[in-house]
Image (tube, rainbow, N blue to C red; front, side):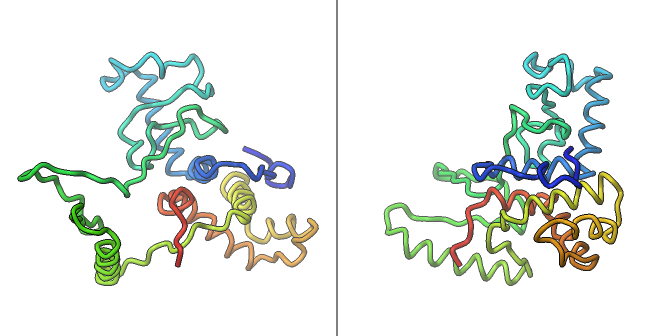
Length: 225
């Protein structure tokens, strides 16, 4: 991980892709790190789930960008494979979004509902789509209100991501308090007004970005409203 005291360690190019931003937050999540270590221990012990493991995943070094673990925990974090959080740019980085799928079923066919927070909407492809989409949107919004779900209405502000990452590295990695972080960062140009209270508030926002609903929102299309 970079040194949170050094501004230059957190300069990212404008072309830095959304999936890499999502990875930067996910790899700092202590829960994800624990899952990785547990799966890696199972892999090294050679327990049953790895007996027929793909040779493509058997890199000599877990620090190799090619190394991945195709284990059940990947689903928890919406990844196509579990990846080493110490690797900046893993080659098999891929997120599996759990929305936007379309299924056309044969007559009489069905599929299993995923739970009350996943809606199934039918469309008649013989009819015009705009009025059907408008009706579906109204019904989906009503369902959100009934379930008291507050959706993320827009993509998080990319401009804050470098600061968020610095705060996470200082707090989680270096075990610094909000005051200690503020005392360091306030000496930088443009951050003179950064105090303990502001750091703490920004840190809470940073922590939310480590959760699936946070980093996956980076990959979601921004709301137009």
